[in-house]
Image (tube, rainbow, N blue to C red):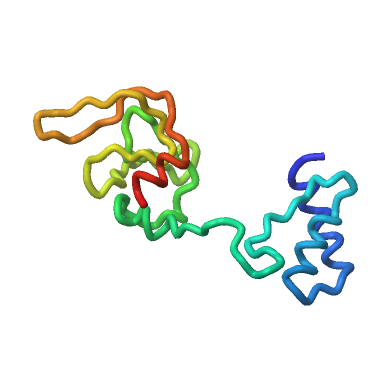
Length: 144
């Protein structure tokens, strides 16, 4: 069964159940598949403490990226690691392509880029070159 099928099991069980609380919903999700395919990552544990840290990436990303104007009009996007920040978009598959620069300033964006080597230009800006990887713990340590 594909992932949509497992989600369908949740919808099926939900329609036939009375769910009033957060814990009832989480239990319903976990009981919806016979072999434990549907798991619920609960934000709060039984004592009401968070299980993970929620990050507002939308707010954080807006510091570095511009919004794409009229994004809902475009249906085809192309991202190329050799041109960070540049996004060619099309309204239709055969339509004309229009390119947008979404970076607010030139920089190396480290979130999930894989890098191993930096090169500094005469203006001392750092640019992305090649990749090995950065762990999430190192990333969080850099920015927090």
